[in-house]
Length: 265
Image (tube, rainbow, N blue to C red; front, side, top):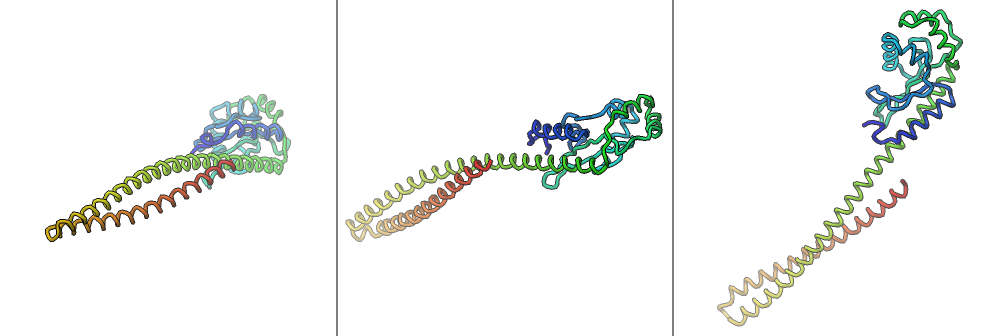
Protein backbone atom coordinates (compact mmCIF):
# COMPACT_ATOMS: atom_id res chain seq x y z
CA UNK A 1 0.00 0.00 0.00
CA UNK A 2 1.36 3.39 -1.05
CA UNK A 3 0.30 6.81 0.21
CA UNK A 4 -0.23 8.09 -3.33
CA UNK A 5 -2.66 5.22 -4.05
CA UNK A 6 -5.35 6.61 -1.74
CA UNK A 7 -4.25 10.09 -0.75
CA UNK A 8 -5.10 13.41 -2.39
CA UNK A 9 -1.49 14.35 -3.12
CA UNK A 10 -2.38 17.89 -4.18
CA UNK A 11 -3.76 18.64 -0.71
CA UNK A 12 -0.95 16.64 0.90
CA UNK A 13 1.64 18.84 -0.79
CA UNK A 14 -0.32 22.01 0.02
CA UNK A 15 0.12 21.19 3.72
CA UNK A 16 3.87 20.73 3.26
CA UNK A 17 4.29 23.87 1.17
CA UNK A 18 2.39 26.07 3.64
CA UNK A 19 4.31 24.60 6.56
CA UNK A 20 7.66 25.18 4.81
CA UNK A 21 6.76 28.80 4.04
CA UNK A 22 5.61 29.40 7.62
CA UNK A 23 8.62 27.84 9.35
CA UNK A 24 11.46 28.41 6.89
CA UNK A 25 12.43 24.72 7.23
CA UNK A 26 12.90 22.32 4.36
CA UNK A 27 10.72 19.24 3.87
CA UNK A 28 9.99 16.42 1.44
CA UNK A 29 7.94 13.21 1.69
CA UNK A 30 9.34 9.81 0.79
CA UNK A 31 7.70 6.43 0.36
CA UNK A 32 8.62 3.09 1.90
CA UNK A 33 11.34 2.68 -0.73
CA UNK A 34 12.92 6.03 0.15
CA UNK A 35 11.93 7.61 -3.16
CA UNK A 36 10.46 11.11 -3.15
CA UNK A 37 6.66 11.25 -3.42
CA UNK A 38 6.41 15.03 -3.18
CA UNK A 39 8.23 18.14 -4.33
CA UNK A 40 11.12 19.46 -2.24
CA UNK A 41 10.31 22.61 -0.28
CA UNK A 42 12.88 25.13 1.00
CA UNK A 43 15.82 22.87 0.10
CA UNK A 44 19.02 24.87 0.37
CA UNK A 45 21.91 25.08 -2.08
CA UNK A 46 24.14 24.18 0.83
CA UNK A 47 22.48 20.77 1.06
CA UNK A 48 21.40 20.04 -2.51
CA UNK A 49 24.02 21.73 -4.68
CA UNK A 50 27.08 21.34 -2.49
CA UNK A 51 26.70 18.61 0.13
CA UNK A 52 24.62 16.18 -1.96
CA UNK A 53 26.37 17.39 -5.10
CA UNK A 54 29.38 15.15 -4.48
CA UNK A 55 29.49 11.36 -4.31
CA UNK A 56 30.80 11.31 -0.74
CA UNK A 57 28.42 14.02 0.43
CA UNK A 58 25.45 12.24 -1.15
CA UNK A 59 26.50 8.94 0.46
CA UNK A 60 26.62 10.56 3.89
CA UNK A 61 23.28 12.32 3.38
CA UNK A 62 21.55 9.14 2.22
CA UNK A 63 22.87 7.32 5.28
CA UNK A 64 21.41 10.07 7.49
CA UNK A 65 18.09 9.77 5.60
CA UNK A 66 17.98 6.02 6.32
CA UNK A 67 19.12 6.14 9.93
CA UNK A 68 17.79 9.47 11.16
CA UNK A 69 14.87 9.40 13.60
CA UNK A 70 12.98 12.33 15.03
CA UNK A 71 15.11 15.49 15.20
CA UNK A 72 18.83 14.88 14.78
CA UNK A 73 22.15 16.45 13.78
CA UNK A 74 23.18 15.52 10.25
CA UNK A 75 26.74 14.67 9.24
CA UNK A 76 27.31 18.19 7.87
CA UNK A 77 26.37 19.93 11.10
CA UNK A 78 22.77 21.00 10.36
CA UNK A 79 19.59 19.94 12.17
CA UNK A 80 17.35 17.55 10.24
CA UNK A 81 14.25 15.55 11.10
CA UNK A 82 12.46 12.37 10.01
CA UNK A 83 8.84 11.72 11.00
CA UNK A 84 7.15 8.41 10.14
CA UNK A 85 3.86 8.39 8.25
CA UNK A 86 1.77 5.42 9.41
CA UNK A 87 -1.69 3.92 8.91
CA UNK A 88 -2.95 1.25 11.32
CA UNK A 89 0.55 0.86 12.71
CA UNK A 90 2.06 0.25 9.26
CA UNK A 91 4.80 2.63 8.15
CA UNK A 92 4.08 3.92 4.64
CA UNK A 93 6.79 6.55 4.40
CA UNK A 94 8.37 9.55 6.08
CA UNK A 95 8.45 13.31 5.92
CA UNK A 96 12.05 14.43 6.19
CA UNK A 97 13.69 17.82 6.18
CA UNK A 98 15.15 20.51 8.38
CA UNK A 99 18.32 21.88 6.81
CA UNK A 100 18.72 24.61 9.42
CA UNK A 101 21.37 25.56 11.95
CA UNK A 102 20.73 25.32 15.72
CA UNK A 103 23.19 28.18 16.33
CA UNK A 104 25.65 30.40 14.51
CA UNK A 105 28.12 28.10 12.74
CA UNK A 106 31.78 27.47 13.42
CA UNK A 107 33.23 28.02 9.95
CA UNK A 108 36.32 25.95 10.61
CA UNK A 109 34.32 22.77 11.22
CA UNK A 110 32.34 23.30 8.01
CA UNK A 111 35.50 23.92 6.00
CA UNK A 112 36.77 20.58 7.29
CA UNK A 113 33.58 18.85 6.12
CA UNK A 114 33.95 20.58 2.73
CA UNK A 115 37.42 19.16 2.27
CA UNK A 116 36.24 15.66 3.33
CA UNK A 117 33.46 15.53 0.75
CA UNK A 118 35.41 17.30 -2.00
CA UNK A 119 33.81 20.77 -2.11
CA UNK A 120 35.52 24.14 -2.32
CA UNK A 121 35.58 25.36 1.34
CA UNK A 122 34.98 29.03 0.44
CA UNK A 123 31.92 28.22 -1.70
CA UNK A 124 30.69 25.88 1.00
CA UNK A 125 30.88 28.54 3.70
CA UNK A 126 29.24 31.10 1.39
CA UNK A 127 26.31 28.74 0.86
CA UNK A 128 26.23 28.07 4.61
CA UNK A 129 25.72 31.80 5.31
CA UNK A 130 22.29 31.55 3.61
CA UNK A 131 21.08 28.74 5.88
CA UNK A 132 18.50 29.77 8.50
CA UNK A 133 19.23 29.54 12.22
CA UNK A 134 16.53 28.15 14.54
CA UNK A 135 16.69 26.94 18.10
CA UNK A 136 16.65 23.17 18.44
CA UNK A 137 13.42 23.32 20.49
CA UNK A 138 11.68 25.35 17.76
CA UNK A 139 12.86 22.89 15.11
CA UNK A 140 11.59 19.94 17.15
CA UNK A 141 8.20 21.56 17.74
CA UNK A 142 7.82 22.44 14.05
CA UNK A 143 8.83 18.96 12.89
CA UNK A 144 6.46 17.23 15.32
CA UNK A 145 3.61 19.50 14.26
CA UNK A 146 4.16 18.66 10.59
CA UNK A 147 4.31 14.94 11.41
CA UNK A 148 1.06 15.12 13.38
CA UNK A 149 -0.80 17.09 10.71
CA UNK A 150 0.35 14.86 7.85
CA UNK A 151 -0.41 11.67 9.79
CA UNK A 152 -3.90 12.95 10.58
CA UNK A 153 -4.43 13.85 6.92
CA UNK A 154 -3.09 10.54 5.59
CA UNK A 155 -5.22 8.50 8.00
CA UNK A 156 -8.32 10.54 7.16
CA UNK A 157 -7.70 9.98 3.45
CA UNK A 158 -7.14 6.26 4.00
CA UNK A 159 -10.39 5.77 5.92
CA UNK A 160 -12.37 7.75 3.35
CA UNK A 161 -10.85 5.57 0.64
CA UNK A 162 -11.66 2.44 2.68
CA UNK A 163 -15.25 3.58 3.28
CA UNK A 164 -15.67 4.26 -0.43
CA UNK A 165 -14.53 0.70 -1.20
CA UNK A 166 -16.89 -0.68 1.45
CA UNK A 167 -19.73 1.38 0.00
CA UNK A 168 -19.09 -0.01 -3.48
CA UNK A 169 -19.04 -3.58 -2.11
CA UNK A 170 -22.20 -2.91 -0.11
CA UNK A 171 -24.00 -1.48 -3.12
CA UNK A 172 -22.95 -4.41 -5.27
CA UNK A 173 -23.99 -6.88 -2.56
CA UNK A 174 -27.40 -5.24 -2.17
CA UNK A 175 -27.98 -5.32 -5.93
CA UNK A 176 -26.92 -8.98 -6.20
CA UNK A 177 -29.07 -9.95 -3.21
CA UNK A 178 -32.04 -8.09 -4.68
CA UNK A 179 -31.64 -10.00 -7.94
CA UNK A 180 -31.47 -13.33 -6.06
CA UNK A 181 -34.60 -12.45 -4.12
CA UNK A 182 -36.44 -11.85 -7.38
CA UNK A 183 -35.28 -15.25 -8.65
CA UNK A 184 -36.48 -16.91 -5.44
CA UNK A 185 -39.86 -15.18 -5.75
CA UNK A 186 -40.20 -16.44 -9.33
CA UNK A 187 -39.28 -19.98 -8.24
CA UNK A 188 -41.76 -19.75 -5.34
CA UNK A 189 -44.56 -18.82 -7.70
CA UNK A 190 -43.66 -21.83 -9.86
CA UNK A 191 -43.74 -24.07 -6.78
CA UNK A 192 -47.15 -22.72 -5.85
CA UNK A 193 -48.50 -23.55 -9.29
CA UNK A 194 -47.03 -27.06 -9.10
CA UNK A 195 -48.51 -27.57 -5.65
CA UNK A 196 -51.97 -26.56 -6.90
CA UNK A 197 -51.69 -28.99 -9.81
CA UNK A 198 -50.59 -31.74 -7.42
CA UNK A 199 -53.73 -31.18 -5.34
CA UNK A 200 -55.92 -31.41 -8.43
CA UNK A 201 -54.17 -34.60 -9.50
CA UNK A 202 -54.66 -36.08 -6.01
CA UNK A 203 -58.35 -35.18 -5.99
CA UNK A 204 -58.93 -36.58 -9.46
CA UNK A 205 -57.01 -39.75 -8.53
CA UNK A 206 -59.13 -40.23 -5.39
CA UNK A 207 -62.35 -39.82 -7.40
CA UNK A 208 -61.15 -42.28 -10.03
CA UNK A 209 -60.08 -44.79 -7.33
CA UNK A 210 -63.51 -44.59 -5.68
CA UNK A 211 -65.26 -45.06 -9.02
CA UNK A 212 -63.51 -48.33 -9.89
CA UNK A 213 -63.93 -49.74 -6.38
CA UNK A 214 -61.72 -52.65 -5.24
CA UNK A 215 -59.57 -52.46 -8.36
CA UNK A 216 -58.64 -48.87 -7.57
CA UNK A 217 -57.12 -49.44 -4.12
CA UNK A 218 -53.56 -49.20 -5.42
CA UNK A 219 -54.46 -46.08 -7.30
CA UNK A 220 -55.94 -44.67 -4.09
CA UNK A 221 -52.63 -45.20 -2.28
CA UNK A 222 -50.82 -43.25 -5.00
CA UNK A 223 -53.39 -40.49 -4.78
CA UNK A 224 -52.85 -40.22 -1.02
CA UNK A 225 -49.07 -39.95 -1.49
CA UNK A 226 -49.54 -37.23 -4.08
CA UNK A 227 -51.78 -35.36 -1.61
CA UNK A 228 -49.13 -35.65 1.11
CA UNK A 229 -46.48 -34.42 -1.31
CA UNK A 230 -48.69 -31.46 -2.16
CA UNK A 231 -49.13 -30.59 1.53
CA UNK A 232 -45.39 -30.92 2.11
CA UNK A 233 -44.70 -28.64 -0.86
CA UNK A 234 -47.15 -26.13 0.54
CA UNK A 235 -45.35 -26.07 3.92
CA UNK A 236 -41.96 -25.70 2.21
CA UNK A 237 -43.35 -22.89 0.11
CA UNK A 238 -44.56 -21.06 3.22
CA UNK A 239 -41.10 -21.36 4.80
CA UNK A 240 -39.50 -20.00 1.63
CA UNK A 241 -41.89 -17.05 1.61
CA UNK A 242 -40.98 -16.30 5.23
CA UNK A 243 -37.25 -16.41 4.43
CA UNK A 244 -37.75 -14.17 1.39
CA UNK A 245 -39.61 -11.68 3.56
CA UNK A 246 -36.69 -11.65 6.03
CA UNK A 247 -34.20 -11.16 3.21
CA UNK A 248 -36.22 -8.25 1.84
CA UNK A 249 -36.20 -6.63 5.29
CA UNK A 250 -32.42 -7.09 5.54
CA UNK A 251 -31.87 -5.65 2.06
CA UNK A 252 -34.03 -2.64 2.92
CA UNK A 253 -31.93 -2.05 6.04
CA UNK A 254 -28.75 -2.34 3.99
CA UNK A 255 -30.04 0.35 1.66
CA UNK A 256 -30.73 2.60 4.66
CA UNK A 257 -27.19 1.94 5.98
CA UNK A 258 -25.79 2.63 2.50
CA UNK A 259 -27.46 6.05 2.33
CA UNK A 260 -26.40 6.83 5.90
CA UNK A 261 -22.74 6.10 5.13
CA UNK A 262 -22.97 8.11 1.92
CA UNK A 263 -24.34 11.03 3.94
CA UNK A 264 -21.40 10.79 6.37
CA UNK A 265 -18.97 10.99 3.45
